[in-house]
Image (cartoon, rainbow, N blue to C red; front, side, top):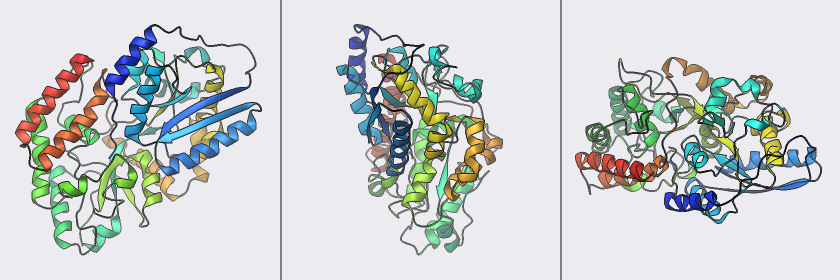
Length: 430
């Protein structure tokens, strides 16, 4: 499961400082100077390995340029980035997420990239949809690293050994429940639970809402669900815990927003939920051969899935080396010399040319991630509007409230009311 946590108060403080800082305008039309570029991203060890290798290739191809890199986990990333923005010393190169791009763009923390299109950034072939997904108020704020979608990652051998057909494309929520109950009752494996407890997964909650004609947020930046909707979601997972169809609260509590701490990776469950670009990282850390499929569906419901930019690469608004940083972005997402090294660990490349060049080089896990995006087509709906300012804070709120229910410190009904109340408060402050 993928969740982000942002220290919003620090970021709000940063916005005041940014308002008083002069922004460096893009410097175009000259040969790039030698430069040291500071680069930061979040992710797994596999992502760090691939990114470091690609950066070394960039340095080898661009004499006089050096890249200082840093990576960390989800939670630490957003806290540290907010602190660095507030201090006026953020890295030149930021890995950005669709959930946060509007907030960072509208507070002036990242640089519009439109003036680089066609010159330093040669990404016109990405297409309008992929460019629009990285845009805010008509301006481009990030280079699309790849597309992905949320899904179910599972160990098929564990399900087979338990004598239960694993969930697949088109499996309903009721069918998923019955499969999980059957697995947990029959398995003799250490992984005695069918699935992780995804009650705190805002991404899966969003898919469930979409199937039922609701949304996390409306186009106007309002909450797209009510307390009854949230209560039904928490009730579903409370029933799963009572039936021992998902991991109990103490095991789910070990999860720290990383592939390494997923109940699947730790050996407690036969499945979990995550973005398709994370599949490569999951397979790297799990010895059994894994598979990825769609999340459960609501019969006759609307599509839960959508294709989103897995991440985007953005430039700090006050970077002193914006053009050189744009060169690095282009190298990683549009130049085969860099993009083929990154592969599909961050998502299926947006460039048709890169995808064509990449296909013959893919290992089995990477090929499965690409095939998943292809097979998902019947279950894909429209990309929702970018979340409003402050929405990033709701990931932590959702996890906290879900844990209160899991440890029986709150009822699903009270949790539903609390989630809506806190969401309204967060968005009002935003």
